[in-house]
Length: 221
Image (tube, rainbow, N blue to C red; front, side, top):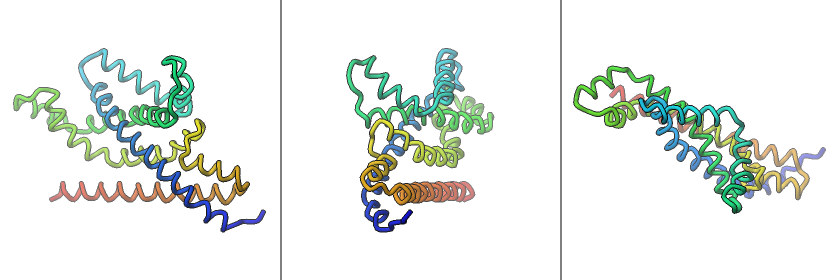
């Protein structure tokens, strides 16, 4: 086997374009998952039994099934229900957001439960409702504590988003597959793909660590 650095370097522009799409998918999925997870996490701690049961079912179902199956459900099964083809980008974002939302819901729930119960009692004693206390007192404090696990979720989504390549969506992994089909340079291309994923995850990890230090510094000040 002859290693070709030229093939590897010439493929980098196309792979970087795919990496940009990977980042876009991951960022949108985690952002939407953050919204979903916030409401689901609070619902799991709320007093409304029906909402709590629905939230528990959603989290258990999503965490108990593979992301790949969820992508297939959205891309292949959903068209049979709605009667029309689903766009690959919509399927990728929808499946990844729903998946991320379940994990973020657990992160939010744990973050909220880590706040001292006296905070809720203090808010209620000031005349605030349960919702107002959660919004203005509990959630802001919990958010600072969940930054590290949220960063880990983003890193996980960066890697898991490679699964959308199975529906033909041209993110980083799919771009690598297409280049290999043309050049037959499997080792060089997959090595380049691995390096790009490593750089992205390392950069996100450093960014999360910097944010955590900043919040800790602000709390000390």
